[in-house]
Each structure stands twice: as C-alpha cells, then as structure tokens.
Length: 235
View 1 (cartoon, rainbow, N blue to C red):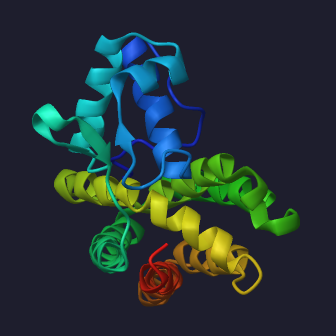
View 2 (cartoon, one colour):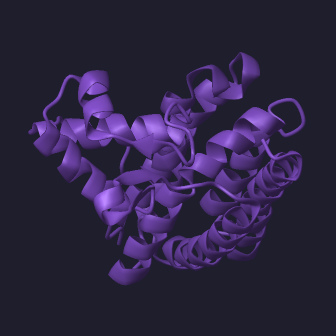
C-alpha cells in the first residue's frame, strides 16, 4: 500500500509573509539569481521582495536549516557556495537514498501507486518533449520532475528513509538545474525518465535501480565537470 503523499498538484497556498519570503528567496537561490557566495543584507532583501525584516529573517533561518544560506552571526549571512566536491557528495548520498527507497516502493506499490506514477510521468514527459527539453521553464520542469520521483518512491515503508531522501533531493535541486542547462544537447533526459518509468511499472527492481543509478550519476558527472572547470578558471 502506498504510504506517502504524492506531490503531483500545485504547491500549497502561502499563509504568511514568512512563507512567501521563504519561497521567493529559495527560488532565487536555486535559480542562481542570488549567486553562490552573495552576501544577503536584510535591507537589500526588503527592497527586492517588498517584505518586512521579520519575515525575511525567519526565511533566512529556514534556508540555513536547508543548507542554502550560511548564517555568520553579527556578520550577517550569505548564499552557500556550490562546489564540485559538494556536488559529488550530495549526488552520492542522493543516489544511495533514492535507490533504497525505490527498491522498497516498487516491491510494496499497489494499484494507486501505479496510477500516480503513470500520471506524474506523463505530466513530466509532456514538458520534456518540448523544444530544449523543458529548460525554457526550469521551475515548472523541476516541479514535474520532483512529482515523478516522489511518485516512484511513495510506497516506501520507512518514514525516516522517505524523509531523508526528500531533504537530499531538495538540496540537490541547484545541481540538477545546472546539469539540465549544461547537457540539454548531449543528454536525452526524457528517455532516461521513460526507461525509469517502464522499469518501475514492470516491477523490475534490478532494472529500475540500475537506471536510477545511471540517471543520478549523469547529473553528478555533468555538474562536477562544469564546477571543476569554473573553479580552475577562478570564475
């Protein structure tokens, strides 16, 4: 029986200014509009988002817990840097958690799980079959990509594994976006997702986990190469 909520629909409506500040800041960090290493001044953020200092401070505290912002006491805070070493580490941990959750989910998944996987896959495929494989709207692509991967592991029977897997998946988002931009002409991400979908629906655990391993490693390799080159040139 599927035991975890599948995130297929739109995001929940924001109930407070703190939630709005968190979403806006997070989106700008993930997209790179707020660059890695950028000092985040409260006044600058107030003007940027039209929000008060209190909700912005609350959002920064949450983003610190997400490891997207680094708090520096009286010195303020900054966007956490991206590096080839961090990309390798995050990618490796995500691969371990994702594969274990997928293995358990395919084994336990019921008819509702299968229906949700099919629905999420077709929504993702519809954007990836567009020109440039969906990178012209990376935010929408990421929402659909996340929903598909959540649907695949939703029948995982370990709440802790499911929770940890989600945290690392979210942390990996900055690197996924960079990978999509760098590999749009060299990597058929839609076919990778189709192979993953088919293996899951066929209940072929060995095939599905092998495809997932290659899928995540492809992202890690692309990102580490791009960041290593950037670090070498000092950009």
